[in-house]
Amino acid sequence: MSEQNIVKDRIGEYLIPYIAEYVFDELSENYLKRAGAKDILSDIPVPIKKTELTELTNLKIARSMAMVIGCDINFPHKDKYIEYINRTFGSDFVPPLLNEGVELASNGEYERACICFRGALMLAPDNPDTYYCYGRACKDCYENGEGEEYVGRFKAESLEAFERMTIIAPKDERGFYFLGYGYLNLGLYMKAKLTFEEYLKLADSVPEETAGIPKEFLDDHQEILGEIKDWITKLESPVEIEKAYNLILAGRYPEGIDALLPFKEEKQYRDWWPLYYYLGIGYKNLGMYDEAISNYKTVLKFAPSDIATMEELVEIYSLLGDDDSADKYRSKIKVVERNMEEEKAEKNPNIS
Image (cartoon, rainbow, N blue to C red; front, side, top):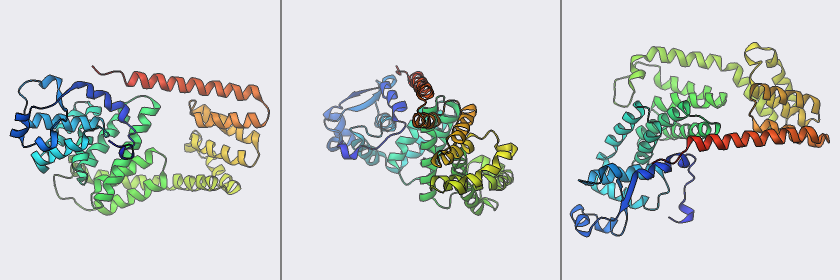
């Protein structure tokens, strides 16, 4: 695969080790002729699952191909594998693959479910069910996984899957439901509110039972509608806070600070660390370093491993010539980064 065709893969490092479950070998000329695939797979090694080395079938080989490209979306023979599967099985191949992924997820094998669904995505990139299943599997991974980086990467992957789903299937309520919660989870409150409102436009009627709508959307329809309406109401204040954040980010520091300060007096926001982080940014850029330091330290009270806040403190203390305090936070940053690397290593051991 040429360098310009390499796709950025934010979760590949967690899934690629599963390729160790496969061996690779070239198929015989006779086998390729019988399979009608000599022009595709001649001199191309194909994956065979180590537990399926006997009684090979076209279906087993294709399934292994789908799983390998699900592990590594930049696998060197990806295009040949996709061509072979599409020629041999056509559109009939993807639905059973999705069912297999659903079964894996129901058994708690969330990363393997992601692999299944990623393979399906490359085979059927216009199928909204593949994005829906993949987004939910990534959600399962980050909800059950450990480590800040692991969780963050799977969150981003899940969000992107639901964003793409809403683009290719703008009438499918499922994408908007989970995308709204994805934005909410990331503190993108305006986007969450707008997405939930779009969900209500699509879902605020009795749905017909179809294969595309999950059981929970049918059985608990009115409850889910009420839940989303409640969230839209609850998001009114967070949306105002986000507007104030954006004033800070736009360099309108006095306005942003004035808009944020009242929320420090509200009980539900007193321990909400992003509030103090953005106040810190505002004060720092106004040269009000004591106020900035105070707010950044409050951030670390609620989010003690937040590297961005520590970096802000290093910068301020360096400006003030307080080298001891700057070195203190530099050391803390190194400790947090080391802990993150150790967590990543524990999360991603070699798979035998």
